[in-house]
Length: 117
Image (spheres, one colour):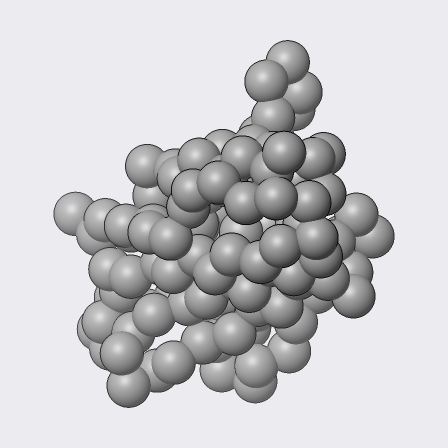
C-alpha cells in the first residue's frame, strides 16, 4: 500500500515560519493531485492547499491564502507546504493527502503537529 509520510511540524512563534514535507509517492504511484489538510482540536478537518501534480496548478483556502505555499519536487517525489506569517489559529495537526479526483484524499499521511504560540 502507498503510504505518505509528513515531516517538518513543530512549534513556532506568531509571525514565524515552518515548512512541511510529504513523501511517499513515486513515479508509479503518483496521484493526479496532492493536498494538505489540517484539523484543530474540536474542529472539522479543513482542506487548505492542493496542487495538480501534472500542471502544477494550485488552490488555497482563504484562511491561508497569501501566507502558505504548496509546491512539489518531482525529482524527490516530495510535496511541500511553506507556512509563513503563522498565527495561533494555524495550530492543528496537518495531514498530507493524495488522490485522483477532488478533494485529493484517497491516500493519507499520519499527520504532523504544528503549534503556533
